[in-house]
Length: 75
Image (cartoon, rainbow, N blue to C red):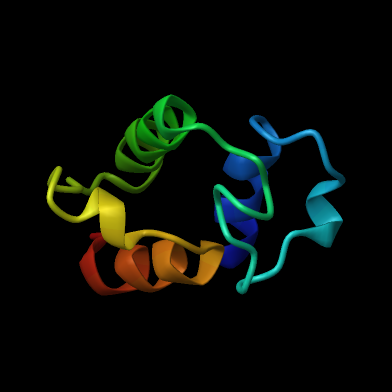
């Protein structure tokens, strides 16, 4: 799950995906805009066949938050 998450994030960030850790903050560390975060969430929904409610998106602050959410909710 982590590797697939990093692969998707790697399409949006300017850094080397191997430098992304579970503690990497989406906005502060990876430099993603709020629009990019929404697009990434849409990619995760498609990739993992999961729905991420709008109220949950603000709680996804780090890569680890995303991985945990996907592990708990993906089919």
